[in-house]
Amino acid sequence: MSVSTLPISEQLDNAVENAIKTVSVANGCAYTLIVQRPLRPEPTPVDLLAVVYVDDDALQGEEDTPLGYATWRRPYVVLCYGVGSETNNTPYQKKLNIIRADVERAVMADVTQGGLAQNTFVQQPAILQSANEPPAVAVCFQIEYRTRYENPYAAS
Image (cartoon, rainbow, N blue to C red; front, side, top):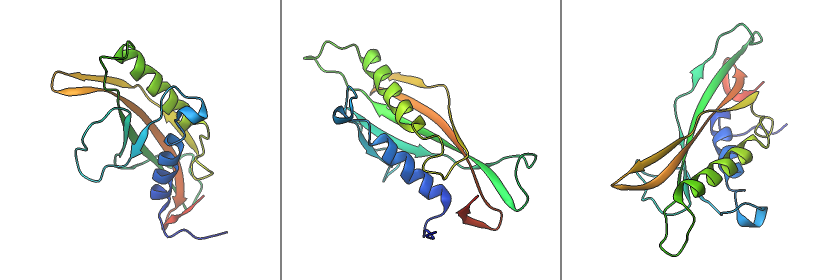
């Protein structure tokens, strides 16, 4: 068994990013997404950009957690932009719904995220519309995982 130099939480982030990178025309999807974790607080929105945001982990109750382990929920929001075009007759909401479904399918293809997690839970998405910003959909989900209580680098 190899020991990673990244904590389980960062390994999960990499697994999520790699899963979303499978959303491509080559893999049978309608669109190919440009996937990134933000390098700065507000990346410049471009068509088909999927920005993976991660919130703070929440420690879960101990009733279902084996002794010596901690169970965590890690929330994700993938903000996917669907900038319209005058030459394309696809309504932007249809485009965003297709992108959302493809991202959810990619993330849920392996609910254990390569064996790092206990489960993955899709949550309610939100279509974001503003006169000053391009349309986007927020794809939301949480990943439940366990670590050894004293070692966030070791999964259960």
